[in-house]
Image (cartoon, rainbow, N blue to C red; front, side, top):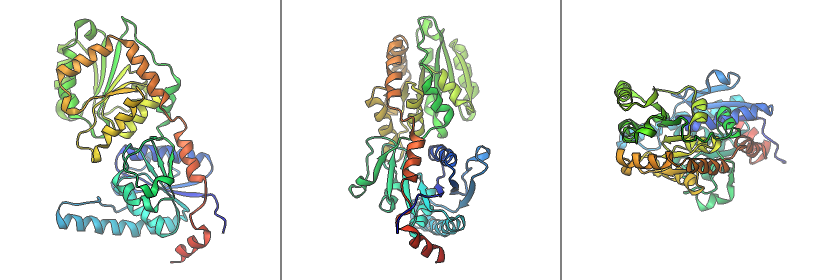
Amino acid sequence: MTARAPNRIVLAAGGTGGHMFPAQALARELLSRGLGVALVTDRRGGGFGPELPEIETHRISAGGMAGRGPLGKAANLMRLGLGFLQARRCIKAYRGDCVVGFGGYPSVPTVMAGSQLGLRIVLHEQNAVLGRANRLLAGRADTLAVSFAKVDGIPASSAAKVRVTGNPVRPAIAALGRRPYALPDETDEIRLLVTGGSQGASVFNEVVPDALCRLPQALRDRIHISQQVRGPELERIGEAYKAGGIRHDLRAYFDDMADRLGAAHLVICRAGASTVTELASAGRPGMMVPYPTATDDHQSANARRLVEVGGGWLIPQSALSAPYLAERLSSLLSNPALLAKASRCARAGAHDDAAQALADVVCAQGDRNGDAQRDRGEAA
């Protein structure tokens, strides 16, 4: 039986913004094409919120891929089993005909349920290393959409399924790439943005203020820093910047990230998939400090992809100290042409049409075995 294009898409995502942001971008694109979209996430997931109220959101049970000790592993397996049954019921009730998984353990039950029902499966990998959940599910996928031209950890048996789509970003971030990078002259204010991503980064609280206060006075007089500071450190860090004569704006959370990223001349950040993708999309140079205990060291791999095209600099956290960072910053900020070149290189590596490209993959063909098998799944 001839396969048909899907009409009702089930997105499986949860956990951090790194999974939810691309899912949300894809949802917008699918809705613009007149397709139905539903989201299945775990019980802790916030969903897409008020921005996409028309999307059905279903919350299921989910557990990690491992546990601490036999009891923890058994509990996780039970949660995954329950989530599988809940997801299967949601997919059948919605009459979904394609499941798109965005990685992370909350996506596992839904992708497995969609596969068992005979639906077409698309997996999206945001990082430069295939995540453990997607590694587990790769054999069930019809297409594996990736964000980078080189992704480590893809099984040889799945290599033919790979399509490079890029990683969809929020529309406000994507729009920044159409604005020129404002190269500071010798007297302009230099705007720095420091963010630790959705998980924060306490190391920046310790190192960055000390580093900036070590800069020559002429540079310190020109710097304005916007820094994400979580926990009880905000007052202490503010006092440190005040003592160094450095203009600063400290927040626990930036709800205007697009504006701050657009204004920044240099970003000091972690190297999560969304962060690296947004740097490229916006054309903003970054000093990236990968989270050292990230699974499979995927943040280092993400950062290397941007470094390889000349769009930023990687600093291992083990090498990050106030004297070292002060030296690097002094060199970069005193040579704005280096920042401008990194901006151009970062922008050249962006996938501006990532949401459209991923939607094209999703819409390219119908479910893997045609309507007959789906009908059998619905009858089960």
